[in-house]
Length: 233
Ligand SMILES: *Cc1c(COP(=O)(O)O)cnc(C)c1O
Image 1 (cartoon, protein in one colour):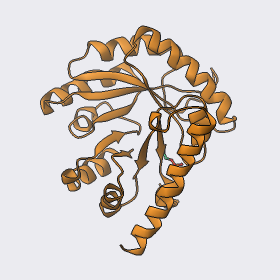
Image 2 (tube, helix red, strand yellow; image 1 turned 45 degrees about the vertical axis):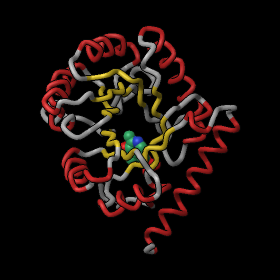
Image 3 (cartoon, protein in one colour; image 1 turned 135 degrees about the vertical axis):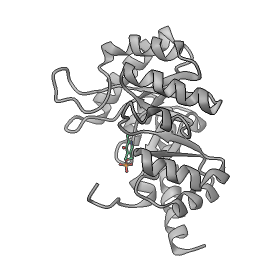
Image 4 (cartoon, helix red, strand yellow; image 1 turned 60 degrees about the vertical axis):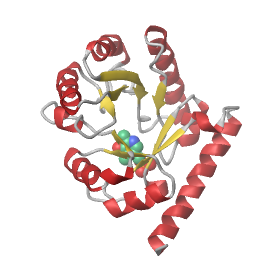
């Protein structure tokens, strides 16, 4: 293997051990938590290395980059997660390659996603992205918790979309455990109405332990596996 391959393999081993230990600490089964490796800003050659190392799920946050990489890596049989801010005029195109769209945060996205998924002849899994910022804060992306029941209903009613759960990012400047505990409560409420919405996507390189302690079923890890991204985004 190349030295890049060795580096990624070693990083991946560390992340997999962190997930195992966090599951043990939380009294959860190890296979409760799936790893999505976030490959944004890294080349398709890295995606190939990851597939060789047994990674099954990758995440991207920009449409053009994701579309190109998914096409280049179509032979690998990976599940592509779209995790970035989504424009409604790009949503149908995203549904043409994404297996999971994790960042659905407003009603306007539902119809184009549904159209794109139907045109592709596939079911696309949808996670609603919820904002964990305190009310009144300068909102990062994500729906307010109060907007979720309506958004969930629209996804359930849309052709070719499957409501699978929630995604969130811990706010800056707050202990992630506090934020993820709040998220777990929001998730329980969603599951009461939608028992199939079992997925909770939370936790990144810096806070995956806190997320797993609070019930995350998917962690999205980029830099801890692939190294630092270029500073200019
Ligand atoms: C980039 C990104 C990640 C991965 O972040 P790391 O800190 O590199 O692990 C996870 N989730 C989202 C939504 C992202 O945009």
